[in-house]
Length: 313
Image (cartoon, rainbow, N blue to C red; front, side, top):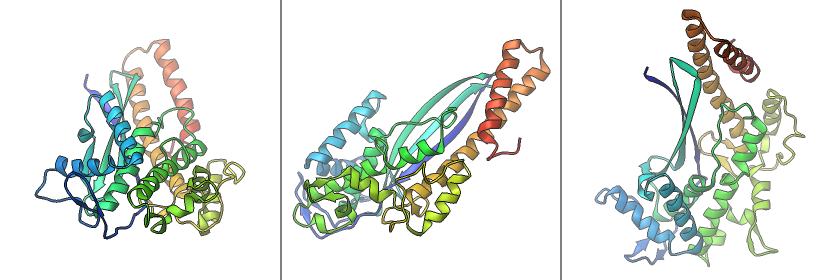
């Protein structure tokens, strides 16, 4: 029997960077203000130039090495998991496989790919590349079909979790300061996450900044209340001016995370509804074992609890 596949795709866009007339030496001259993508080069050649540029600074070299290691663990090279796109994002696809003849047995597979905006200047591309490779390398995969996939954890993971937005932005800023040690500090929102007391990028400051939602705070509280959460569940979220905006949603990251969670769960519940239909049809057509009936009942009860906000049961 042919396998049935349900695919969910999640992605994250990096904050915008800025360009500057500056030359940074690599094996062949790399002008940071030139477009990074040239049609007369292959995609791999374009990426190799960026890799060489990042490898010239400590933070860039580290993220390249770690990304190579992760790709190799899956049998790929770094250039197998990167591609040219019209936006910079890390696209993670969760594939759920099961046989229509036995929908109770499920297998999951996660695949990630980094897309880099073809329209950027070289400096912007270096920063975006470091940012997205941080997501690719460190962000922990989540399974929205899991019983414990909750909004509170999703927001926290998106913003401050390992390989989340704060971590990726910290790496981006470190690369910027290392590439442009004299002028980089005055060029973007990176100073907002720079702790002058310790003279270094601070995750604590990053978390504070990324949880600022500005005039969206009232709507944010209303949105999370739909999922039985209150502002006490999200104590780090504030109405401070929001400087960090999700390119995917055009909203501060905590607010965007709620929208993304609802979008994901809508697709998950529709997929689960289809799977329940397959299981019910199988039970109806043929004498069902107690095990099959029990599996259907368990899944249906779980479906009612998780999906009452997303589908009509």
